[in-house]
Image (cartoon, rainbow, N blue to C red):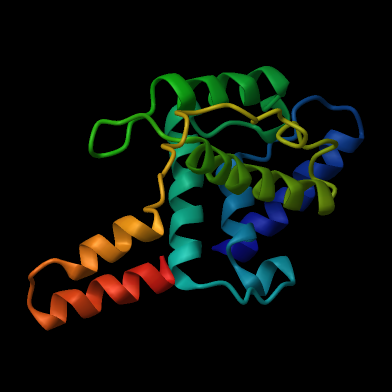
Length: 173
């Protein structure tokens, strides 16, 4: 099935290069080849959890915009997706996503489109050079305890195992 998708992509690439309009390559077809190491020529040494998250991020994009010809994914689509992630996408707990999560979601899409560019199935990757600084919910600032606060905490009357936990946390963060 993936080999057929790859062959289909190659045929559509030729049509696109000859000036016949849309490439006919759909984003989901590129995704299938991208995640299949036999087809994309790479053996990915990536944790299963990372691959699962990347697949989920890519699926979020497809759910948002539909499965479309990759040549119709332009800068306005990329900016609209970033705006949607920032202003409408919510985590399961109901919070908006932070800057780091937004960047991770965009990274997944950018990687798939970069793969398409490298295969000459797409001319440019519109997700490259998106300005993502200060986008998403600001990360909460963490305040560290002072040495005096840590000493006071450890000096409290508590079971030894809790004191040990606090000491480990104080040393490791």
